Image 1 (cartoon, rainbow, N blue to C red):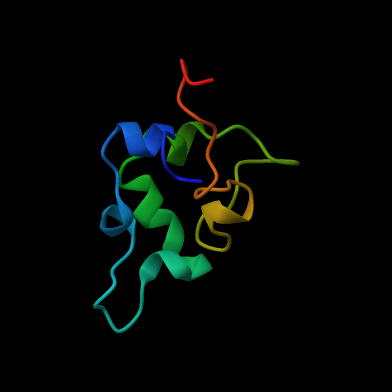
Image 2: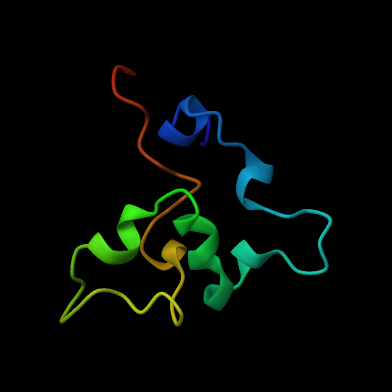
Length: 79
């Protein structure tokens, strides 16, 4: 599912987001997930489209609640 996605094409791999040897993997917890994602997606912190009445509260909800990070669309040019 990950192969050929934009993250794959940009050489983002599992360890770019996941911390396999840590006591807790920050990307697996809603409250600590957004800072991991926003490390690369900096623009989204302030320019994220409104959801409902406003910008998501990143301290309360993770990115994966809406974005299927392991099943991203294939990169343009793929069939």
